[in-house]
Image (cartoon, rainbow, N blue to C red; front, side):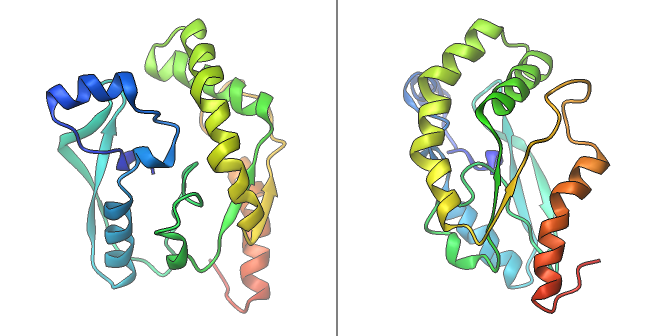
Length: 185
């Protein structure tokens, strides 16, 4: 869902970066997310925007071409925090990750992938990320149909999850779908 940040012009972008809480669901273009999900559910492909973290805006020259599929996965910290799109979900899953693990992964990702300083990451985490998590993201856990607890290994080595981690986290989802009479392959 990070690809669905508001589309801003050059002057708007500079002002917005100083004011917008990018950790709030209001920073997402919910109308576009809804339209794209509706199109995919109707069997139509979409061009998903690509978010540029350095510009704090969508990349106007690139997009992801997404084809409709039997199972559409909407992932992101605000996926369950946007009431406009929740009715489109057949199953809502909340991945609960402890604060220390989320922070360790964020530091590792932002230092390696985004070239940020640890001081800057900690400032952002304490000023907006953590408060927004408890205001918007965490409450959505109580509305999810399935909650998976992520007690995975701390952020060491690879920044992204490996295959065994994904399989471990997917196991409860596959079990739930199987009990519903669906057999995901």
